[in-house]
Image (cartoon, rainbow over all chains, first blue to last red; front, top):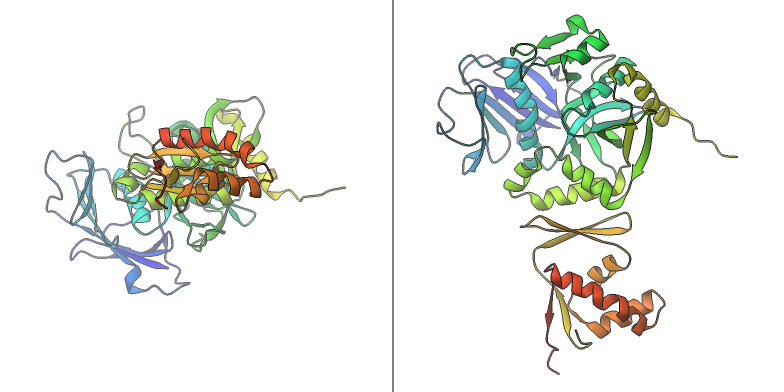
Length: 322
Length: 95
């Protein structure tokens, strides 16, 4: 297990939290994360510090992504600058004035987490993930494909939510890919929140409803949060193809490879970090060892439970033969 | 392409098996190839440079077919690899 420390210079520390198996302390309260349960000791070389700082991390006209000697900088206009050092054990955050803290954390647990994964030899798959019958099942696909909604439907049926947006996969044993849980919260749009009648379990971003950037972060935790790595059981490829009935079909070979390649979380960043070979190897290992299913389904929100039932049945069914 | 030509992999390609296919990527250009059938085995055999005839004989043995029959499939495949800059074709080695 690793340790991440987020600190605001001399400001008080929050945490420790658990994130993808790392031990994390922070100057910013990270409300989505679960407290470190201390099940495993952390070692100093696996420590990551995340600090807040007032000094500019970048030039005013800097692009979104720069990779320099002192690390990788992300500049998100109106939100913050983020810097991940080359050892991926130190993240510096420079919030812009009046930045929305929820939006800032969404970038921290999105793009910044993806950089930490690439630099620490993990594969960040874009998707949402639940625990089904002892295995991690990831719903992956483009934005708007319904990943978080389907994961929420399953979580509300009692299957623990493991991560949302970035699913960190550990391929150090190529025959047995493991998912490292992040946190049991999910990012949803208002129509899905209404559909699930989630009410008080949701924190909303500051952007007004109907405007770009409006979303809710919903807490769903049917039991104790899972912090230990979990074997990765399946990846579901979600697209917007509408079928009247929910059904799944296995993708093989290059089709499985191509889908996973398309859903590497900001895969271009991994390549710009000079980790194209690592990325390629991880995608090939995943395509060769984890079943990738294309999920055809009705996309109407009021039928999401039907789709959740199909997935649940597929993973809980007992195999029988005559 | 004649039988005595030496076929060698070009630098910069990485490859991995996915099911029965060998997927290859050119690390710099991010260009992908998907080798099906015996294509993946041919790439494996080219780990060290080989002549066309050696390649056809080896494949003939492994797939239980005549070298001439193997040649009919191997030559167009090598042309494709050449076109996609995955291999180089060298003159025969001096005796």
